[in-house]
Amino acid sequence: MKQLLTLVCKINVKPEQLVKVQETFRTFSDACSYVNQEVPEKLTNEIAMQSLIYQDVRARFGLPSQLAIHAIRRVCSNRKTAKSKGDLLESFAPTSVTYDIRTLSLKGNIASLTLLGGREKFALGLSNYHTGKLSKGKIKGAVFVLHRDGRYTLNIQIETNPDAPEKVNKVLGVDLGRTDIAATSDGESFSGKQITEVRNKYAQVRQSIQKKASKGTRSTRRRARRLLQRLSGKERRFQSHTNHVVSKHLVQLAKTTNRAIALEDLTGIRERNNELPRSKTERRLSNSWAFFQLRQFLIYKAIAASIPLILVNPAYTSQTCHKCNHIHPVRGQSYRNGKRFACGHCGWKGDADYNGAKNIEAIGLNINQPGGSELACSLSDHVLGLLKTPSSYEVG
Ligand SMILES: [Zn+2]
Image (cartoon, rainbow, N blue to C red; front, side, top):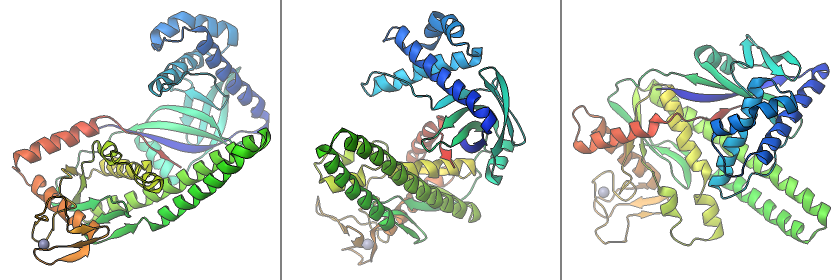
């Protein structure tokens, strides 16, 4: 199975290279804007767009052929994204340029990139992690990025080919919860308290800025908007970092103890969760991309480490007592109460997320057994289907 991975690498742009780099960024985005203006609004087909405007772009902007092609491709993909959101693509900022293996080459930590007026060499700041991944993967392309704070990075996309999952007969059940970020069938849990606190703090700050912005003058409003953007970036980075740490830990644990990882199959849960009207606070906590990101990281890292993944049907994993398999006999009632679980049948009491993780482990074990039930077959097919699409995530 192939995996795509984006390595975000620092790139050292020397003062004498800066003008050339800036000019390339500017020309690339001008070319994108031009294509977007000239090509009929509805067109999103790359080949059609290329045949329509490629020569014109080359002549007008003097871009090297691959960069011209990538500018057109950028317009196509941005138009598709805008269309899916019901927006219209308007303009391009000179903040990134796309590279492929014809316009980028890498030797050690030196990257050679095609710019307007020829190639330039740049030193990359590579960590051991980067070097390790680069040595095992195949470079597919890169994006040269200018960040808001003036830093440049080269975001290199590589394709790796992890080994097929190993055969194991033990399972680590993981419940990705709401109050806790994650709980395992070993009884370990990762508190979501810190993340919740940070999110609430940012939400408060955001609210007060929004209030100010709505009353302020034009320049106050602009400043407030920038501040909001910066805040959301910080919050996002904090959550991504936490998710990386937790998923890495869980994958290492499964690896060293020779176990598969079992998770709930949550296809479509986002829709279900939003069916009921909820308070603003609750919505913020539950409709959380961070929760889905953790799942993605976990699945991604498990595949990279050749750990088998089992997705189990989430029906009743939180309602059932893992000791005696009983569910509350009265419809609509549950032994679970927030963080607490108290079984009315066998009397087991304890953490509700731990109980969930134990149930997930038990179902996972059942599925993992050789010659398992039909249910097992359909579920594992589903896992395979889910994982066929190569996912991608960023690492700093
Ligand atoms: Zn019980």
